[in-house]
Amino acid sequence: MPKRLRTAAVVSMGLWLAGQAPAAAAEIKVLTTGAFKQMVVTLVPAFERQSGHKVIVENETAGVVKKRIEGGEAFDFAVITPGAIDELIKEGKIVAGSRVDLARVGVGVMVKEGAPKPDVSTVDAFKDALLKAKTVAYIDPASGGSSGIYLDKLFERLGVADQVRPKAKLKKGGYVADLLLNGEAELGLHQISEIVPVKGVVLVAPLPKEIQNYTTYSAGISAASDKKDIAQALMKAFTSEAAAAALKEKGMEPAN
Image (cartoon, rainbow, N blue to C red; front, side, top):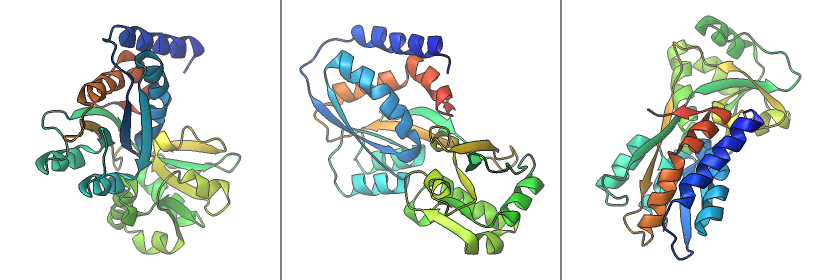
């Protein structure tokens, strides 16, 4: 993002927060799925400065975040997938009516910086790239990561699962890019927002539109939180003009 736009986004966030009613400083806990973490860490500092509140951020895969909440872990604000938020509302863990869809992101293909970029412009070209790669890295489906679950099923649909799975390098959480940086994998697949911020890897391209899968990220407020008003203010910060500008920089787009 150009510096002037980034500055404008920060100013926009500051002006919005300046108009919020002051409150006693408090600490709130945010549980977020990994792909949205970059947005959280980008927007939280301005929120903290202007509101005086402290935000504790913890991230895991969508499946793990959901399990932690179902297990009774205390939190104030969560960012997961829409389906997970809806299930947690039914279970009484998240306030009914508090769900807001924040952003969506597609899956991209990456290589280590300086490595040849394969052609992935069509479905057939993508299949060929998968078959030619010596190793392919993606999120372990068993860990509950949205992209890993989708990709494992996609390989079956494309008829390459038997060839890809034996050479797969699976990441249980965090950046799949790490497996390219340390030399364990040649080709990587992950959500674009988890490729863009990593130095040393290059986004080749999004998956072809015919097989692209968008993951939407939604927020909800804990039913057990005693700081719902602060969580609501944070929710508004995540849907502000500043947030929309930051989404583009991070490889995501508004959900609506």
